[in-house]
Length: 533
Ligand code: ACM
Ligand code: ZN
Image 1 (cartoon, helix red, strand yellow):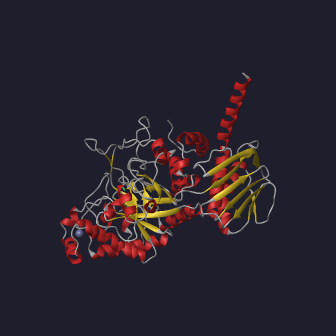
Image 2: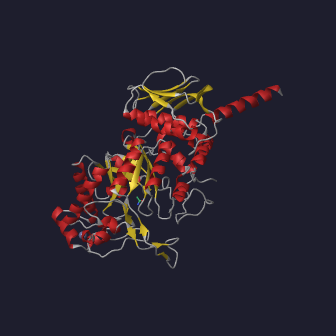
Image 3: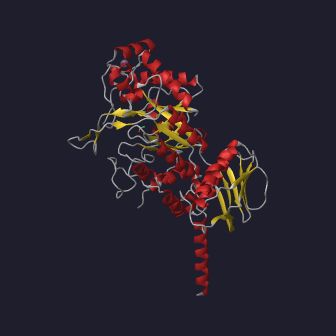
């Protein structure tokens, strides 16, 4: 009997210990210790390198305290040994995203190679604090800001950990964009792929071509309910919106402060009915067009005549100025080539360039834009269709039609982001019983997302290194509000974060679900409209 009691006690301790340290994504190494550190209004954040980047890395953490605890923590360059959160740069660490965290009863010590690592260490500390730290107003004075003692040595597996947000089908206002960015940072994701243009709306102000937003940002009507319902019903309210260049700068800077790079996607040659409505002269037929209110793939795409390239280069001149990211995403997916087949300009282009078919004409198209951007120091990303007529030089391939394109590209020596639609399309439902949104009833459960590994087994090691990371995509045809979008994103983004961060051999779905209980408490205080079984 005594022995049983002892085992029970042991188990209870193990369970409570496990519950105490619940970091998502799961750290590479994490050892729990006895005791805890308590943050109070005398705790000081001490920076070994007191500069703007380091101050920025700790500022979000201090904002949490200012709001929830009612006091900010003093930030100083002067060393203290007690009641201190000490952040130190250690150049010998492996990557600029790596960090070490040592929580003891007298101090929290953070080591990182860069300010980004310090930021990630503090995201871990945030998750170890009572969830009340997420409160948007001051909580009761008797809440103790305790952090369990722990030793963490952590670094991500993949350098690209992203989410794509589609703001064309439904627009995401600026303040909501910031909230999405905050939540991505909470999960240590580092890339926001911003799908800014599509058939249903052009969302980025371009000064040289004002009609892109005056006309192209608004559609006169939108299909109601399921697109293939018969007969089609229309919502005849004009729908749209766009970001001014000032908005874009503000959002990019906001993300950058949270160590998230924003990659803009300017779709070409397909998914371009909205810009062609504004400027039909860049199509094959000359139009007229109407910004699409249906979902799908449409035949009117950019023509390959010279004036189109001039137009796109002008647009990209302004885009490049707004986005410091290394990459510009050019889309390239779902471009029917039927208009090109029947266009004198496109056929002449093929003759002049010695191109055998329209697939090669698309490669010519992408190559021209790629070399233009390369002259501006930018690399391109394209959906896997860009492989069809030969890959444009220097392109990174985003594999969405399963992993096939990614495997082919990695094999040919191109870098790859894995974003296969059977695992990483978060517009698909999470379960049979979830609130029904949209027509895509394919189910991608939390567990399915969690168990995805972005490096296909068929790739030998020397090719596998081309898999740079993983991305989830949120297409918003049927997602209208921030609540809808959060419902589809969370908690799957938590699983995604572990796919991108945690070594495969450390992943464990049951353990993840246990740790997720703590993350849900944080979501609750943040008011995240996450999906629950
Ligand atoms: C895509 O889903 N068309 C990239
Ligand atoms: Zn044409």
